[in-house]
Image 1: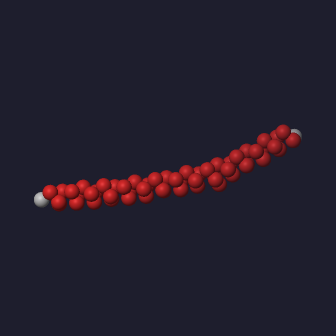
Image 2: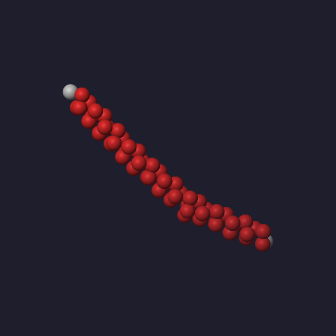
Length: 56
């Protein structure tokens, strides 16, 4: 009986860790990478446009 109770408690704690800690951290990291990619795209686009206009 004790082994079953501890297994259930362990499963509940594992789910809490996955859904409470790991997934929000991954989504936060993905949002950071997405914002970084957008900023990099804007910088590259601005440098490309400035380079094309300066040649003319």
